[in-house]
Amino acid sequence: MRNAIVGQSGGPTSAINATLSGVIKACCKSSRIDKLYGMKNGIEGLLLGEIVDLSYLYEDEKALSQLENTPSSALGSCRKRLPNLDGDISAYEKLLAILEKYDIGYFFYIGGNDSMDTVKKLNEYVKQRGISLVVVGIPKTIDNDLVITDHTPGYGSASKFISTTIKEIACDCSVYRVNAVTIVELMGRDAGWLTAASALPKHFCGLGADLVYLPEVPFYEDKFIEHVKEALKKHPYVVVAVSEGIKYENGEYVGAGKQSGATDAFGHKYLAGTAKQLEALVREKIGCKVRSVELNLPQRCSAHILSDTDINESISIGKYAVRLAEEGQGGKMVTMVRAQGEYKIEYSCVDASQVANKVKLVPKHFINEDGNNVTEECINYIAPLIMGERKISYENGMPVHFRIG
Image (cartoon, rainbow, N blue to C red; front, top):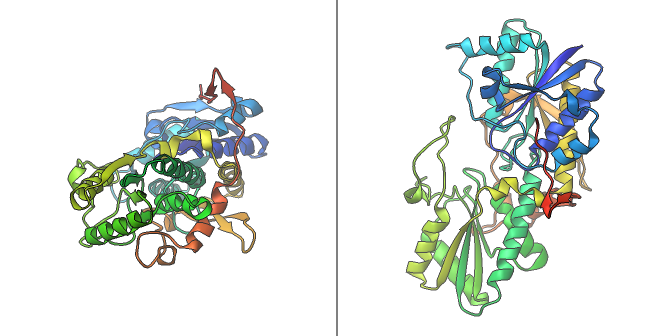
């Protein structure tokens, strides 16, 4: 038997700890894995030797249940990029020295498309040198933008929060007779999956976002104003959902004038200010009452309204990753495959190289012809992912969360 190590990387989600719980549960029952270690702050922390023994959680069902309902990354996260293998490989040598010290034979990395770049590179490095280390990628991201897999853990709970919040905002806005426009900005740089979820309450309850704009189609200010005016003719309150990454036809972000220009380690610009920009536009062109709302971090950390479907799938995908590792399938990422007919998910895998640094966009047939909402096919795709509620434990009126010691 050898030991395993698991890390979390990239933006947190409210379901990433459920995947961690799945890994812990499967390692506990494994005949090939002895201890399970956790890397604090992903690869970045591992390079510093910051490791915690997670084996104490093997038999603690209460703690694991709390962990599954805990938001953010319990092990911490990072956005560190490993260098290309044709350059300086000192980071790989340092990683392997640390892994050998702890007799690590299995390496699990929970993250998005950038994290799969880490899985791909590390797997290539150990294969080239004949090192016995099985590297497995486990998907997560609220953005739902990983290719090949049907959807990603974390997206269902984020969608549940977004659709619920949009419905509540619409309820609030509907109490007045005065014309008013509320613009809600949602995360989504290149892919509008999160913003698409804002269409659910209007479809099912008749009260929600009147207009939905995704980054997959060019944004035109004149058409936007026309759409808002048409919506105001139907009722005095109009709710608009926009992705932070919507762009003009020339590729410039709508909110570019409100952004700092700063980028992360992978060269991604930090986006914000799109709703504010459109608020000013509506005020200028229509002159009615208008406000903007940026949901920001709550989209990925609101564990009080988890999707039970999402959490259960997140646990299962962690368990399946351990199964792949036991079979020696290194360099793979776990995928979810949706069966035909009644909603059901099966698990499979692909090479992490097929996922790394790629983006899955909302397909054209999920967006209506006017580019201001989604189609029923899109609704049917998202709806099963938000189903079910978790039983949340409370103490002193606050939800109980678990901290890894």
